[in-house]
Amino acid sequence: MARRAPRRYHAAMQTPAHRWTTSWQTLGLTPPDGLLEALRARYAEPHRHYHATEHLDACLRHFDTLQPLAQHPGEIALALWFHDAIYDIGVPGNEARSADWAQASLLQAGAAPEVAQRVHALVMATCHDVPPRTGDQEILLDVDLAILGAPPAVFARYEAQIRTEFADVPEDAFRQRRWRILQQFLDRPRIYHTELFHAAREAQARTNLERAVQHWKSAPTP
Image (cartoon, rainbow, N blue to C red):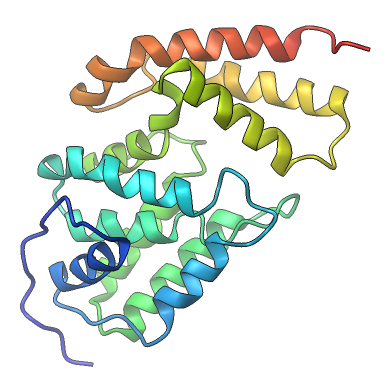
């Protein structure tokens, strides 16, 4: 498929459909037919309580704030659409399968291989297991972790949603796993990589995480 001339990415689209179209137009591409519907169906799966449409839409809105810092804003936007596309609880490799789907979709649309590979790497960065390698990856990770620096009530809702997603995990096992995951973020010198999110969200994120770690480490009420 022939590629169009890339356009500049414009933030603050009013609807997710506009954001979706703009992301592809920024790369001079037209998305494959039915792809948006397939992604939306994935994010609407009934077992999702946090990693759902609300989280995707929030990420896209947060990216509006950081997109002027991006080298390849259209690539980040599409990586956000795909970053939780596959979310099968208890099954390893969700990020890899999501990244593969993104890469295949871009190649199908006529993207250059290097563009598809960068989007693949962006999605894989959301494993949060290695430091970001590019400024665009830093932006993507800050957007994905924006919830950590949310107001306490919003963060508490997020924690409750995560627990519901893992409702089949016994309480003791969940508590052990959860506080260790959150402690890993607390142990980092910086939670947020961009100066903008570091200034705006770092302090609140550490407060939220410290409280959550203490909550999950404490013995459950009989």
